[in-house]
Image (cartoon, rainbow, N blue to C red; front, side, top):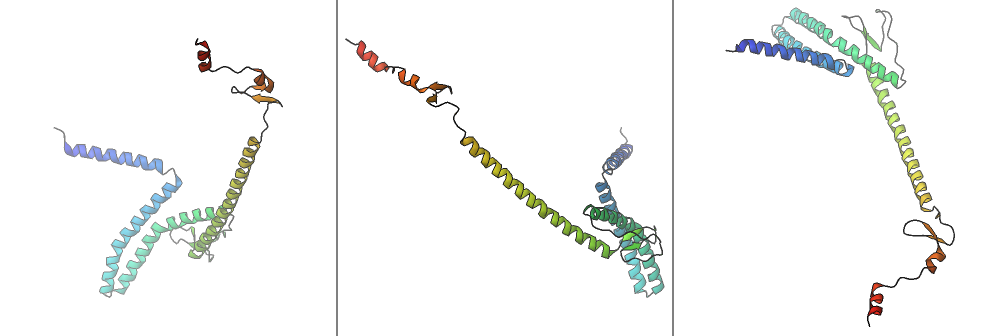
Length: 218
């Protein structure tokens, strides 16, 4: 008999290997990898909320303010451990998009003790992340430049269609006005050959079959 437990374990292991291989392949696409990391970070933050929120509420109910502050500090630290890499990665993407539209991105501070209104320092990892003010300004300028780019593209597209329509109409008129290649006093027969007009006049008219039959009767 087939051991169902071993079969289920092997099937689960095979599914895990296939899933891991598939994720490894799709993560080669940077946008997909970032989306997966963001989704994983969102799930981790939700788990932290489920873990700490009841504890903080209980400490507040017990009026144990020291315990409450301790729990809030741990909660913030764990949340920053999850979210700071996400913010840093989004800041890099936002800066690259801004530079694409030739928008000036302020340089990051070189010293960790330096204060900046545009950047904030991760107290856990030590890298700089864009501040909320900088993110809002860059997104606003990117939207403005993108809108201007779309308007410029629309103008050029309209002009291109107008020029193409004019050229097509001009070509159609020119083809319609093209002179007949047959010379004067010539005409084009059913086969498309130029024939001298006098040849058509000189040819005797063929009698109709009815007249021939009438002449043949006595």
